[in-house]
Structures are given as C-alpha cells and as structure tokens.
Image (tube, rainbow, N blue to C red):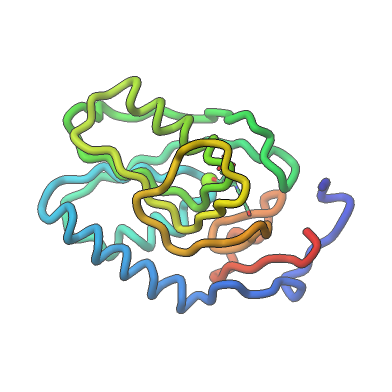
Length: 183
Ligand code: IMP
Ligand code: MG
C-alpha cells in the first residue's frame, strides 16, 4: 500500500503494547541476558532504523561490559509487505572474531532480513557466540528457518507501528506499539 493511498493518524492506532508493558518486558529480557552472559563482553548489533528504541532501552539494563554497533538494513521499501530483497545500506562492523554477538532487531517477519545478517556475520567472522534478540515475532509470514533466541512479544498478521517501527518513516517516536485496522 502506498502512503498516498491513505493517511494514518495516531488516533487511529489500536494499542497492542503500552509503553509500560514494553519497558516491563525489556527488563525481563535484560535479566535473562544478564544471567546468560554474566561478566562476558557482548557486542550488541542494533539493526537500524527500527530497532533503535529497543536497543537503547535494553542496553541500559544490561550489566556486562558491552559495545554497541549500528548497522542499517532495509527490506520494506514503500509498502507494508516485504520486498523479499534485503538492502545493506551500511553493514560495517568491527572484527567480531571470538566475540559474543547479540543482534537486536525490532521485528522478525519473513525472517529474510535476519537470515541475511546472521549469514553475513557467520560468513565473515568466527564469533564465540551469535544470538538474536527481537522485540516482536511475527511468525505467520515466515519464509526462513530463523527463530530469535529472545523475543519480547508475539504478534499476529497485523502491520504494527510505534516504538521504532514505522509506516513510511512515520510513527517511530510513539512510545507504545499499535496497529491500524485494515492496513
Ligand atoms: P523480514 O525481513 O520480513 O523479517 O522483515 C524485517 C523488517 O521489516 C523488520 O526489521 C522491520 O523493519 C520491517 N517490518 C516487518 N514487519 C513490520 C511491521 O509490522 N511494521 C513495521 N515494520 C515491519
Ligand atoms: Mg528492522
């Protein structure tokens, strides 16, 4: 659907996860990650743009030494269904050989973006561990075997917006996650 075909207002959004629910769940994930990594150093790889809110909130609760890396991938283009083609806008990473790598995503839909990135990391580095954390998991359109190691919430076949997730670049700044009926 093209943005010119419809206008979305914030008021039209049906809230799926409130800001409080999101923060509560992020603290739970962080507790889990703290218990897994203990004092080992972690390279947190945030997939821009969508995962920026989640990644910056998550790392505030992580206690191990960590470094943050930011890469930029895009696959959605100008519609609400995946283009099926992942575009590596900026995938520059430091030497991750022997490192614990935690990829942080906003949502896994088809899984093509995650597969592209995890294959890239595995083809270029011999990491100590590579784990994948996604705030949202939309399993219904999956086209790959990819399953996140850590998930915030499951979502069904709705197009969701807010807390980093956008529609045509808009709504990333909304502190909750919602969806628009019929989108
Ligand atoms: P995938 O490659 O199909 O798994 O899609 C992953 C990317 O598409 C995510 O990182 C998001 O940026 C975007 N995406 C997927 N579903 C949604 C959605 O419901 N709302 C906003 N962006 C989405
Ligand atoms: Mg994303």
